Figure 1 (cartoon, helix red, strand yellow):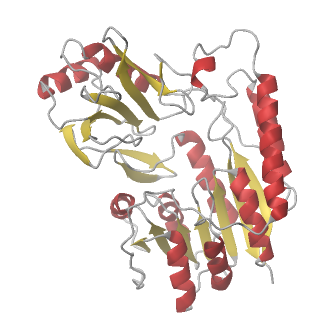
Figure 2 (spheres, rainbow, N blue to C red; figure 1 turned 60 degrees about the vertical axis):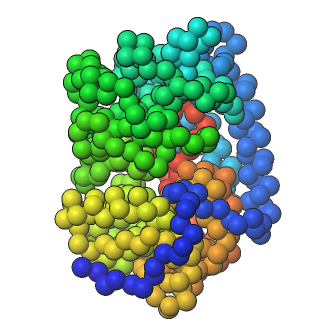
Length: 434
């Protein structure tokens, strides 16, 4: 077992994963900032120009707004995304070819549906129109797992016979607010989360029995209680209605527990490519001490554990840390230690203590990292940094800072985690300049 370091959490641990920001501070790289704005503008204009003036192949395209590139040929999407990343990262490195999908539809294994009703009280389900709280009724989506859509449709069809009212945001009446489906792509396990205003669920046992009769492949059903006037989907309380209340999936040969609130990538096929790319970039020899920052349920650290001497994992969200510890136990990983802490604060503590690591994996939120984190990274002085980014804009900004702190960008590989959308995931390798 790795030696436990004395980097405990502070009291202000209310924020969930992927929520860290720069504390309102401005970043020093004006060049990167200009590139970000320029890149965003050009990319958005290209997508607007590509919008099909004829009938879209998605009937919800004009109302929904989630799939900005649904009518753009897939190879053209990849070319445009690559051009966008290359434009932003050009000052630092040449971007490798985009890693796309062979079958880029129905890849989302986490599907969320908002439940509401029409003027006659008939139940409807769908998603919020982009930037609003207006629900767009949807029966099926080209990005979502077909089985998940079928389960949501079955639930919607069962509500009237069980006299279950959907929630009304205006007057606060009704019971069912949301349904969340999570699917283990490699295990086949399926979790259904019913988000309700009240813990009382009428005819609960009969409802579960009827739903499982329609879909016997469901392995667990969870009731989550959210009685607050909030934009958050899930509340703080939950209880299993059927099964254990969680599912498992396999990623890169490792088994992971997925709870209703767990952060787990929604595209399992590309996730394996993303993480394998990160591990390959690190070129591990087996004697490294690796630091896994913004670690979520411990995915990267656990996958890297067989290839290094020790893994130190830090994540702010306590539920994610709990799952991460269990995931390590499930996979019999003994050379990893988990800390519940803010990644920036943890890095500062390590730097102040004079500790050293050989390698840092960092997978920050969309807003990117912080100047304080990067300064602590400079002091720690790892030989390599593998940066997994879900926003090329914040990545370009952070690389601008990191290159001024003595790091060199060796390579960048973009992976298409979200086909038909503007979202881009990129893996970068940085080395410490001698």
